[in-house]
Image 1 (cartoon, rainbow, N blue to C red):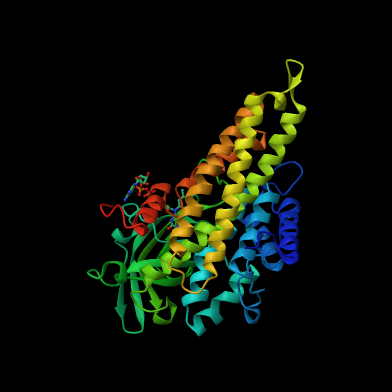
Image 2: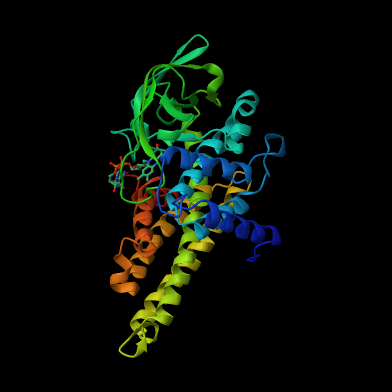
Length: 390
Ligand SMILES: Cc1cc2nc3c(=O)[nH]c(=O)nc-3n(C[C@H](O)[C@H](O)[C@H](O)COP(=O)(O)OP(=O)(O)OC[C@H]3O[C@@H](n4cnc5c(N)ncnc54)[C@H](O)[C@@H]3O)c2cc1C
C-alpha cells in the first residue's frame, strides 16, 4: 500500500491551488464589485479551460492530459484549498464529473468529437439535469419523457436545481424512454441551449455555494437528434450511477482542500488569540476541538483517495459503496468541522466579512447534492444486503 502522492500529483495540487488563489476568487476588482456575474463566471471558466483543469480527464486527441481519477481528485483538492469561491469550484467539478465523464465513457465517437474538446477548452459550460420537483432522492420517479420520432427524440418535462444551468451551453438531460422498464427505462441526452423549446430560469438565490449558478430547466417539445443520445437507449440509469460515483469522490475532493485550509487558519488563530492571559489553543477544550477537526480531515482524505482509486479499477463491485462512504463521511465532516471552526473563532467566526462562516454555508449543501446523506446510507446498507425497505 502506497500512501504518498507522486511528484506530478504534488505539482498539480500546488499549481491548481495557486490558480484558484490568484485568479478564481469571488471578486474581479479591488473595490469588491462584480459588474456582470455571467461574464465574470465565463472569464474564469475560460481560464480553467486554458489551464487544463476542465480537460484533465480527456485523452490527448481531445486536448486533455488523460490523468487518472486520483490525480483528477487531487486537482479538485488544490482548487478547493486555494480559492475563496468554493461555489465556482463546485461548478467546475459538476461540469467535469456529471457532464464530461458520461460523454467520455458512454458517448459515441461522433458525440465525443462534437463536444468534448469544447467542453475541455472552456468554450462550453455544461449542466447535468436529472432532479425534478417531484423526483429528487428518487430520480426514477421522473416525469420528463423522450419520445422517439424518426431520427429525433421529442423531450417534454421540467428539471430543477441544475448546477450551472443559468449560464450553460449544453444540457445533459435524463428522460424516460420506456415507462415500464424502471431503471432501464431512462436515457440520457445532450441538448444544446439553442434547441427550440428549451428554456432556463434565472439563477436561484441560495444559502451557500453562492458562486455556483443553480437553475431550473424546461423542455417543451424539444427535438433532439438521435445522435445526441448518450450511449444506448435505456442506459440512463447506468450512466447516472457512473457519473454520481465520480462526483461523490472527485468533486468532494474539493471539500478536502477547503477543510485543509480551514484547519490551517484555525490552528493559526488558536495559537495567536489570547484570552485570560493564555493563548486559546492552550485550553484543552479548544485544542481537543481542533484535534477532532484534524482527525476528520485525515479520515476524509483516505476515504476520498480510496474512492478515487476504486474508480480506476476495472469494474470493481465496490465502486458505488466506496463512493457513497466517501461522500457521506466528507459531507458530514465538512459540516462538523465548519461548526468547530466557528466555535474556535468566537464572535469573529460569524462575521460576514470572515471566511470562517462561509465554510459552513458551503458545507451544508454537501449533505444534499449528489444524493443526500440518507441516500448514501441506503446505498451502503443495500450493498451489505440490508434495508430492502427503502
Ligand atoms: C447545491 C445543489 C446542487 C445541485 N445540483 C444538481 C444538479 O446539478 N443536477 C441535478 O439534477 N440535481 C441537482 N441538485 C439536486 C439534488 O440532487 C437533490 O436536491 C437531492 O437529490 C435531494 O432531492 P430533494 O431536494 O428533492 O429532496 P427529497 O428527495 O425530497 O428529500 C427530502 C428529505 O427526505 C429524505 N429522503 C428522501 N427519500 C428517502 C429515502 N428513500 N430514504 C431515506 N431518506 C429519504 C432525504 O434524504 C431528505 O432528507 C442539487 C442540489 C443542491 C442542494
